[in-house]
Length: 238
Image (cartoon, rainbow, N blue to C red; front, side, top):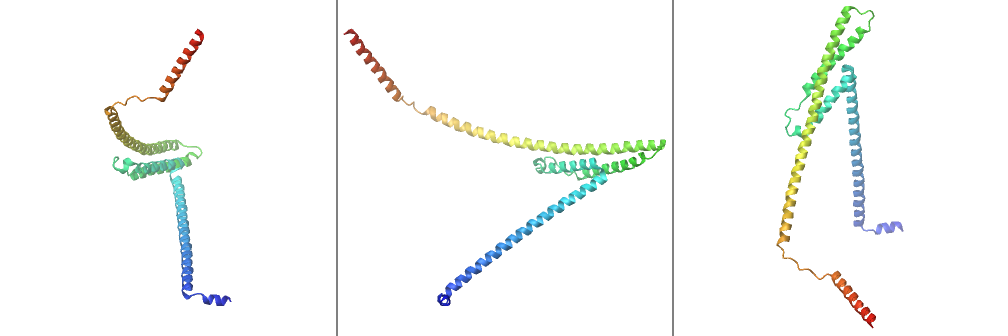
């Protein structure tokens, strides 16, 4: 019986069913491919993020080994300030001119590298027993040189950070100027609208006072009391 029913179904219906099934399979396959592509993109992005993080961590370890912990942190601070400055509106529109601090940061890094190298040898020489007069002389000279190198580099770091702070100040000033301009524009518009409304009100003929419902009620109350008083007075006289 089932075979009979199936054979009774027109060929066109089978074609439509086949097309529907095929489209459903295509949609399912397309959905699966899209999910696989999206998953692959996410996995690739995550691998790249981890790789960048690992590279940044390795670069920082190398900087610490080359410059020392504190000096490496100062270089990081200078680089961060330079990036922040480059991202300001003042830098983008050209208010600050050339904002490339790569040469400054290279000089800062070199000064810190030399200072750290000096201090490494200073520590080794200072650890020796029975220091001689020559030891003390060269140690003093090396310490003074290391301090001068670090001082010059640190001062340049402070200047870069100050530049970034000033750039942010200019951005805030530009934002305030735009806000003031918008306020002035709104004020002028509102003044115009109010002036128009006031002129329209002043030029409109005065509206006669209307008969207020409260006035009518109070008048009736007063009349009632007056009549009641007259009646009471007549009773008293009678």
